[in-house]
Image 1: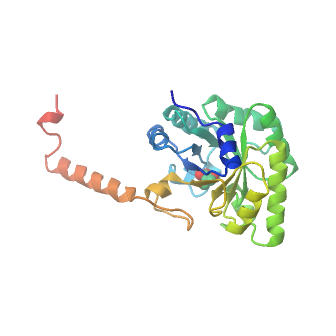
Image 2: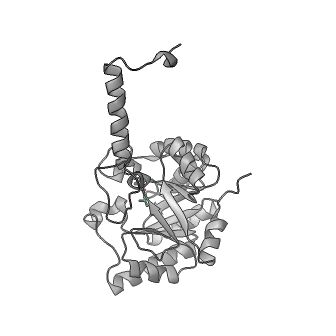
Image 3: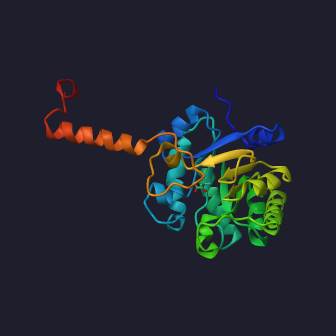
Amino acid sequence: MVKKVTVSTLQKSKDNGEKFSVLTAYDYSTAKYLDEAGIDVILIGDSLAMVALGYETTHSVGVEEMTIFTRAVAKGVERAFVITDMPFLSYHTDIAVAVKNCGEMIKCGANAVKIEGFGDYIVEVVKRLTQSGIPVVSHLGFTPQFINTLGGYKIQGKTEEAAQELLKQAKELQKAGAFAILLEMVPQETAKYITENLEIPTISCGAGKYCTAQVLVSDDVFGKYSDFTPKFARTYADMKSLIVDCAKKFDYDVKNGLFPSDSEVF
Ligand code: KIV
């Protein structure tokens, strides 16, 4: 029997000064392979809007789409902890709606949700979700759903004052019940300072090596998504070339009568 990763496992990593790994997945087979590889947390990121659905920003996906991807990923996973990103405006209009929408993800097999932002309203949302049995990761720093208010892909927490402000936000969310803080595009020293001053784990998305965990978009790791690769991503393969190569070979075989062979027919 495989031992499932839980919020307690992730907290133990923080307490023992150990690291854990997080990758995104949007489909059943990818989730299954990441789980087999020993990835601790699988995130159904709303980055799927770009990498799986071809949209320009994360704004275009809704609750219904996230439930479909969540079901597929959850079915492929035995050991990893599964987190679903709550889409744009699915938790902003009112707390009851937020609880209902986040609850849908848990019903589809997620173990937790991730929500972006800070401030009184978001703190209250985190509190109510936690009280409802829905574990929450808070996403701070560069928050893609706020790209229009932030004015583009900009590093956050660069000054001493901004770092203090980020820590203040993180502490409020920790107090409200968030079990981890994801820091995106934050200078390494700022992320270190925040990590050292929190009791819960931090997850780095381009926030350097001192966080408890590291997250990347799996399509960047595999070299599958070629429209844009962030500076902080590490690419371990060239899946795009592999796919194009395989498709070219199939195309050639079909057009030259080489597929199917005698062993591939009934
Ligand atoms: O949507 C996503 O995949 C994310 C990660 C990049 C952290 O939020």
